[in-house]
Length: 314
Image 1 (cartoon, helix red, strand yellow):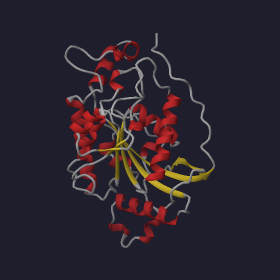
Image 2: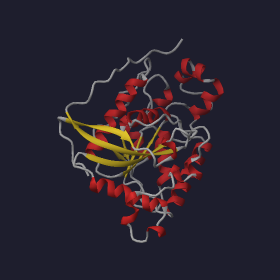
Image 3: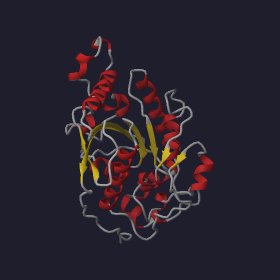
Image 4: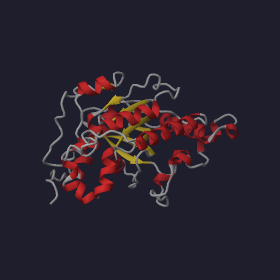
C-alpha cells in the first residue's frame, strides 16, 4: 500500500477494467440494473484464487476481496488500489420539475427560482420515490453483505440535503462497521455542479448539524455557502478539476481501500472522467463501483484547460 504523498508529488488515476460490467463498453447504461446484478461484479476467476484455501467454497465477492488485498500487498510503495462505490442520490423535487418543464426551460428559467407555491427547490430534498430508491440501495447492500461483499471502510457524502438523506437511508442500520451509528464525512467538494440552480445551493453548516448531528463535517467547512453563484454556473472542465482535487485529497489522506461516495449525476460524471472510466449515466438512486489504480508520481499536477463559468443560457 502506498504511503502519503509529498508536496512534490501527485496521484495519477486509472480504472482497472474487467471487474465490473459498468466498465465494459458492451454494457448499456440505460438498461443496466445494479440491484439485480450484484452491483455489476463480473463473475470470473482471479489469479489469486490459488492462494485461498478451498476457493471453490468462496463467493465471488470473497474472491474479489482477496484479490484486491493481494494487489495492494504486492504493489510497490507508490501504487495502491481502491474500490469506490459511487452512489447517486434518490429522486429530488428538482428532478421532477426538470422532467415537467424540460431541460431547456429548466436551465434558463425555472432552475433559478426558489420553487413553487407547494414545494421548495432550494437545496432540494428527496421525493417519496427518491426515498424508496435509497431503500432499494439499502436492501441491495444488505443482500450483498450476506455474500461477502467488502463493505466501505470510509463514507463520504455531498453536503446537499438529497445526498445527506440518501446516504442515511442507504447505510444506517446495515450492521457493519461504520453504519451503527452511521457517521459519514461531509465533503464540500463532493457537491453537484455549482451555481445558478437553486437546488444546487447548500444549507448552512448549522442546519446540516441540526438535522444530522452524527455526521462529521470536514474542517474548514464554512457556515454559509460561499461557493454558490446565482449568476454564473460551473463549467464541466472546472467541475472536472474540482473532482480531481477531491480525489487527490482522498487518496493522500485516506488509507482505506473500500470507499463510498454519495453524490450527484454531474459529480459522478466528473469522477468517472478523472478516473479514466467510460461515461456511465446513473438513474437517480443508482450505484456504480469502480476499481481504481492510483500511482504516486513525482512533480506537480499537470495543467488542465479549464473553461470559465458561464451565464444563464438565453
